[in-house]
Image (cartoon, rainbow, N blue to C red; front, side, top):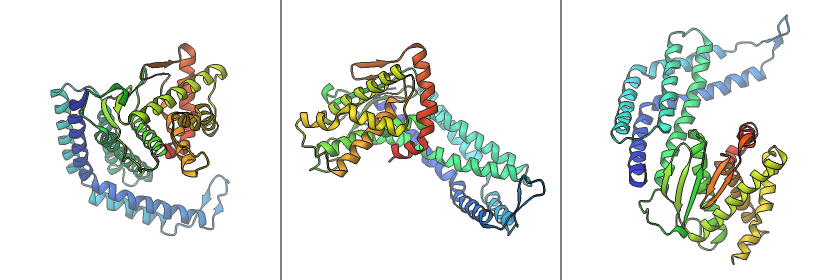
Length: 360
């Protein structure tokens, strides 16, 4: 799919997700009370006077109404969440989406992941209903609902981000466009959304640095010309000067990471590599040489550079084969395999901290 076909599909999915959000509203509202109950129970457990059991393997804590409080919270869900009605409405919307995709010959994308996640959540709910007296099923369901809400929000963001960036102008000047391809990888929903977010964030931060006197996003807004999911292939257009710097910095970032990994055979910790990339990009010097008045002692500019570096790294770490405009970067053979494995182990595990920063 290209351009308007993608737009129509994403708009359709976005509308259906809004319908589903209403279907699951009771569950999403209940999650707040569930989280509150869990915090209250944990607080009472941690502050209670406890004594070790005779075998020394666990603790005996005065109940203090903890079980009753938890049971009451789960009872609210059981009474308010009509799983039969929800399943029927969800099934109808799911069928509409599947029919639309078949009719328009749309390939598998992230909505299938959403279906799997939703089906699994409803299955776990049914298992809890069949085992109401077993606290393990209740705890499992509570955790799944919390995860599902986060997944739902991520899914909505993917389609919303695309709609926000969409343009129907396919004949844009190549100087005002940037072409980014992450090849030979299949990105999951969260990774896909993370890359789109990083692209938008880098553009915004560079724009604020390069045009400090006109304010954020008063320069030409970044727009999507083409995008394909799975392995990301995105063509975007916007301000010619911002995109030129963007491409320059992204190419240098990928070069730096690939070369460093080839030589050392390992990835540095997140904070260390962020600092190294910032130095190697020579951000201040590059912009000053282009005629931009950049004050490297300005705290806001320093923060913008740091934010841009984190997002550049986020994009560069997603694949061992990346093309930026006409420049191809690639790791091959065992080095490629090891790089991808190291990314999962290091960058993604390091990343609860970095993920939160990347989503700023």
